[in-house]
Image (cartoon, rainbow over all chains, first blue to last red; front, side, top):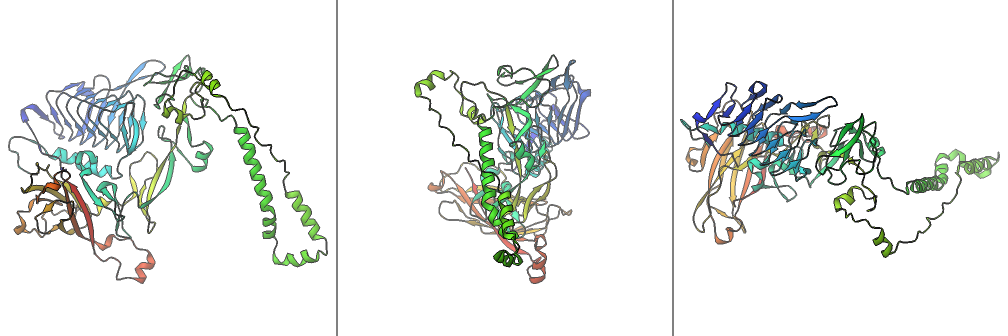
Length: 186
Length: 412
């Protein structure tokens, strides 16, 4: 199914010169530590804890409503350290996700209400099904379908996930248009 | 990602007759056929640990018993075990079920590697038996090997045995044959009685997963960390011409492909454009589809709605379309049929939106399926031919071919 056109109210959204669209009702802290590549949509109620460590988000990402991104805590021999979070390009994070991961690589789809534990790594082209709980420090190879509590690999994603994800995410961005002066393009 | 675009509702027919979604299919450029995972060959391309993404060669993997030496799983919940340091000594801890190597009465270690595993108690005996079988093999093959080594020139001398060569050969052969000490049969041990077993059984009941992970551990023994089993990465070949369809790039962690021939890049991609409204018996309903050409050449295609048993009736005539390639720069689409504008809803570069009218009957309501037949012209320059074929059949190389694709769309 082609993704539907989503109209947004321009007064509620802020647009940056790189094409990022951020809902004004967010809970983003430490903006000086947050790097977003461009054309990324951040919906209402999203929390990003930039005050704890650097957060890097790639291009064409979608952070749906109320998801929470926070740096992971690693305990080294001397003292605990908050590690940077890196989210790749074309990543879709559905509603109410809690992302405590160390790294999410490109073309990853996180289902609704998924919880990613402290310091886990999800490699490219993987999909986390809704309501999954990924345990801390877990690493998943590319092209894995991840589900369950605790999360396990339950299958493989189609090999052309990269193309599908690129197409879907750019379509999502293109179909996210302001309400005023919107043209009807299916 | 097929989840976002809902590819699971549209199934294409593979050349073997199975119905699969388009992202799961491959296209062989030599046979010009659609291939699915069941009618293609798979070959292991690399062996790696899914945790540390460390590759090992096949003999190395065999040596490691197909298990990673440095990664451990929790024996209780099959989750990752994280290493923790206390007084400069390591122990493993599961963040999910709070199991730790201390529960297994293992002392903390200086290094994080080589945690003990439960070994097979009869390993030595097994090794002896295999060694014995190998020796037997040598003995059995010795006469054959000797015969092979002996040429025709030898045979005459052998018959005469003038210089006592035969004796010498016999002597040598005897010397070559290894000593034979038949192994004793495994002494029967007394089978435990049911009463004994019940008496000795611990109160811990293990789940099937736990038993499968550590089949050698008895229920009264403590579980030990499980070594992570290695995984294989596959490459796909066509089962007819054995040409590679998919091969990943060098390196295990990569998601890029060296060779890829996905069906999406050759066959017109049909998707639902909008959700279908509720179907009512006898009333015309509209189905909005979008056809995308993702190949690198322009496509001419005809869409013919099929009506037969078990499929919904579509009242449209066959639709002819001309789609520019995804890579062409000029967005002006050639060959727009203005008279078919009641069918064509929109045109965007390499994408066309269609509106089909369907009339459901009572039998269609439970599982409405729209059956479409596509005929598309495939650019012949895509085809891969062997050098000999190019010489022998020059008329067949590089010729555009009209190919069919059959698909079913579930409207529910």
